[in-house]
Amino acid sequence: MNNTAVVSHPLVSVLVPAKDEADNLPEFMRQAAAVFAAEPGKYEVIVIDDGSTDATPRVLAQLEQEYPFLQSARHKRRRGIADALRTGYLRSRGDVLVFYPADLQFKPEDIPKLVDPILAGEFDMMTGRKEGEYEKAFVSGIYNGLSRKLFDVPVRDLNSVKAYRREVMASLPMRPDWHRYMIVVAAHSGYTVGETPIPLYPRMAGKSKFGIGRIPVGVIDMLAVWFELRFARKPLLFFGMLGAFLFLIGVLTGIAAVLYRVIAGVGFRPLLTLIQVCLILGSVFFATGLLAELMAAQRAEIAELRRRIEEILVRDTDSQR
Image (cartoon, rainbow, N blue to C red; front, side, top):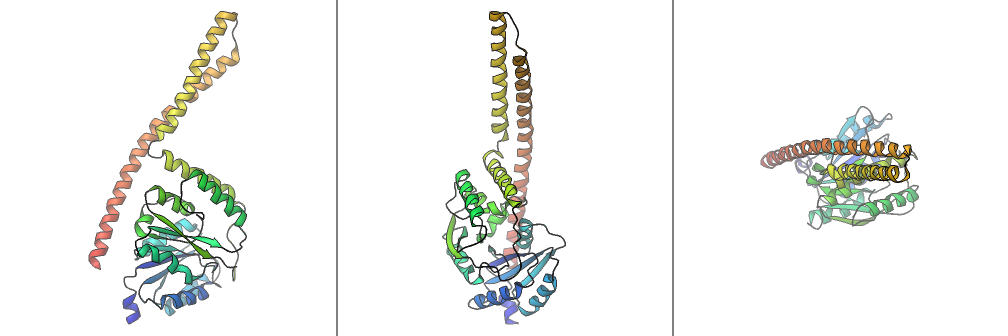
């Protein structure tokens, strides 16, 4: 009875996406329980089974009976980490959320290192800087290097375990795979971000879900995030300037074509083709910018409605506490 009472309103919710992690989950929960025992009621764990095809659902059902701070959610098919974190967020009750994988490459004993600075009011978000050897070190280095070039972020490792205030998650766009850029979006929104070293260990069981095919997807996502942060609120700034530039080239080329005709007495058809292409593309880009401005206004209204709904939900939750 006491255990159930102390976990009724936890401060911290640990969100654990799991895909075919039946062999790792029992040990993960054992280690987590040992850490949480020092501060009963502070933590809850939400494991999101992301379409596992092994014994993960059965293992989770058994673990829920053993650990009162554990609850689980299940996706019938694999939907990715971003969706899993969203599902966990909607089920969570803590003021601080922690993204922690189930593969035990990061030990639960390091969770307080991420959480404590946030609870102390030092940062809104903490990320772990991986320490140790791992398979994706080269790819991760390129990814982090490009990210630092494109985005002004005060950390060196963007793709690691994280802890963040609840409102940070509420402000993130619901896009596939954008969990990798949570720090970038949060920093852009004005949240303070800190970093702490977290040891990385070899996998105890299972296999990595990361494949070489994720690299081009990651690059495209990076460009999408860059465009979102730079031009999402004022898309006409991008499309309009590009359209105006092409239109100007078309006009200047037309003037040059007329002068060439008058001075040399002959026409030059490639110039006419260039004029047509520039004027048409310039007009298309400018019109696209105007349409994008209308969409940006709609997004702003939806974001405001979402913010108000979140405020109502927070007030309702606080009144129930």
